[in-house]
Length: 480
Image (spheres, rainbow, N blue to C red):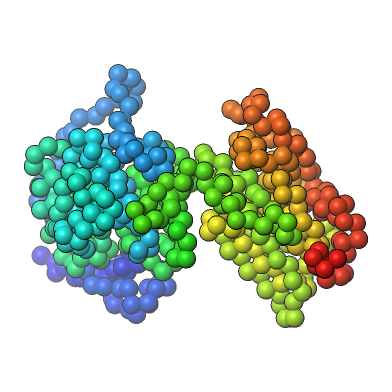
């Protein structure tokens, strides 16, 4: 029989090599390669001839008498929104977030809300003792919730315990990096252990119909630690985001097989735990200075939810050979493109200025529809002209300077009208070509269509004709 040689696996990306080395050739990470046995992991015994395969039954795609998968609603509206209307029975969700962001607090509140509906809910902690979990629940005022607790890390023992008695409706594993299975000959937290433990829990969820939530640690760059294959194995990947200096928390769906992706839920961390924010747009715009130049309100979309946020820009003369470009909450490459279009097609000379752009409130915007709001904020800061406080902007800027239409235009206008905005600068043409067409809720807005980026610059310059001089530094409106 041939001798089984050990392999070396990168604990960051899962790449396999035949020898140990200090730096992974696949992802470039240092000191992440560990030795693992080749004949280990889920499916290893089958590969060695432990048993033969069995014949299983097949179903038909045309079966119409089968009901849709049932959803388990927690009663926490923001959490149910992100999951697509509640947890689907038999689904597996991977929840990631930085340490101390509030993952355990959110899950304790969700477990307590679900257990109050006479469902069996099990919370298994691999990092804390049962008394520590109970102490957190008492601090949140949930000490009387009938949630079953355990502190265990063995996957075989966990699966056997969960299968005994009434089928659980929800199982929380905190965290997947601390779990280990006897089928894998490596230490807990390695790529093989995380993959093997996740696959065993996924099999349990699919065969019993219980919803399982796996808590995952994140790396320094915000990615969920462990192999990326786990993200492909689960049904949904949800990230819990927030900044240390703010009480705002964002629950974002990165992947969801049973609902929309990029959906967000907004929470606020308080002394009583996480509280839902019913109107996130009003929260993001609550402390804005509408009279200051360089501020533009963007009517965006996060999943199926319209959301209004403020773009803040500062254009200042630079004393450096290479001006600075600093961005918070937006794509740096997108800012460079908008600046290049303003220089090439609007006649603005921004190469001698430092440019700072920030999305107020700690939200990160990724859709191209924010181009027009960012351009308006840049032109406003450069000229010193304050934009109308009751105006919103949205539209994608092409490399030719044209303003392209974006989706869900009517939903954006409806949200702006609900918050008291009276004007909107949008791409030329109908704002929506779909389900919201004909909605009369946003008719009270004055919609200005913008076909080219030069039209936006001319409109801002018209409010102060002598202010726009690309060769002069920006003027201070407060010094008039």
